[in-house]
Amino acid sequence: MTLTGHHFIAGREAAARGNLFHAFNPTTSAKLEPAYGDANHAEADEALQAAEAAFDGLRLAKPETRAALLDAIADEITALGDALLERAHAETALPMARLTGERGRAIGQCKLFAALIREGSWADARIDHAIPDRQPLPKPDVRRVMLPIGPVVVFGASNFPFAIGVTGTDTICALAAGCPVVVKGHPAHPGTCEMLGRAIVNALHKVGLPAGSFSLLHGKGNDIGTTLVKHPLTQAVGFTGSLRGGRALMDVAAARPHPIPVYAEMGSVNPVFVLPGALKERASKIAEAYVGSVTMGVGQFCTNPAVVLGLKGTELNQFISNAAALAGKVAPQTMLHRGICEAYDAGTAVWQTIDGLELAGQSETPPSETASQAACRIFTTTIDVLEGNSELQREVFGPCSIITQCTSIEDMLRYANSLEGQLTATLHGTEQDLREFAPLVRVLEKKVGRIIFNGFPTGIEVCPSMHHGGPYPAASHSFFTSIGTASIYRFVRPVSYQSFPEDALPELLKDSNPRGAMRIVDGEMKR
Image (cartoon, rainbow, N blue to C red; front, side, top):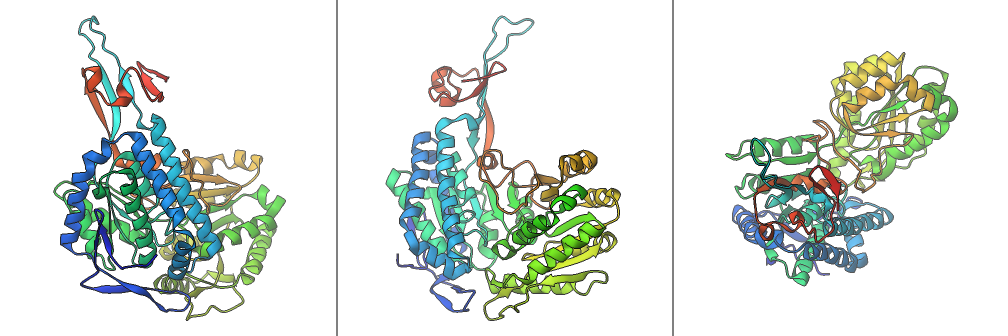
């Protein structure tokens, strides 16, 4: 595929103009062609006007047609072949094996949501039949189902160019629900965005759905993103990135004459509690898995385990020694782009100025500055230092973590109670540990979106029961997930129909239930 640097606006290609920018290879710093341009206000308006015009055609299409669209997107991604992997590798420095796996995840997401909407139970249809002779007043017929909300604006992540990007969960579940999508491409990998955007354009044409159902606009600065969120036709926003970026979009959306939701996933420190029984049984194995999790993907995950807490003693000392030694063997690796690498080095440099925080171990090989490489850095401290420094409560994006020595379970409970909202928390322990530390679990249930036992938070299973979110500031709304099939509920809302004739009702509310979906009928779950 020859890259053009164009925007896609409702199937129309628009050439780059105005402020031009390029992607850069993070390993070599080489400029990558072609140039891309910042979309302007007129192009944003055109994309959202087209999305609104396409809304009825998309939402009223049969579920089988929307499912066919998702299957077609999967096919188009597959058809891009190695060229997609090679461009993404050049723009992000992510290893080819990692990108191959992520491409599989993106394709799998398309098929997962296609199956979801074909079956229909996700729409939570509820039927309460009329009781005309009820006393003292008759009961009307009332039926409820989830319906799409309208045009959605999506901001993809830098660290998952396929699975949380142009063809990521936000886009795919919005299209599945029947919502047109306008994607603001990530400026660090615009070529990858263009290839995936063309895949969606081709899929829409293949199944005959309105071209306005999808647009892709490029932009390096914040102006085009702000314009899209402010636009009166935008009904919701999906965002994955930093707290600063997510909060800025939330404030813009809240200041509109008609505020809209911003579903932002903004990261966290993801505390890990290593309990006494686990330390005695398998400290070395936990240390090995811990360093592997910290350095996975050069630490560029929102679920990176940035803080570990254990009870002071011989076992924890051995755990720290093992982790430090393992960190030394980790070779520095190239980060997604120079800006992220500079922020990582600056963040860990600040940590090294804090009294009582010690560098326990780091990559023995020095990182290459020209290749934007990051060294693994494992620190150790005590609970009073961790609690007494606000700099240690914030995420530093990259392969670093702090092992904290506590004196008692009360230290752990106090720290857990002080936590802001987190995406995850992890417990390593035995069944006896879980019984003894049950109060800690009860606290974490109030603080996080996912609690892991004897594992690590990196690596998210895409499935119906996954919840990837958490209380603010991990996410903008703790009720909703950005991964898994439940993510579709961000872009729908419930509508009730009262006393409607059967033939005027949405398919899922008809008594005949032609799709055989699970529904609540007169208080009973049935097909």
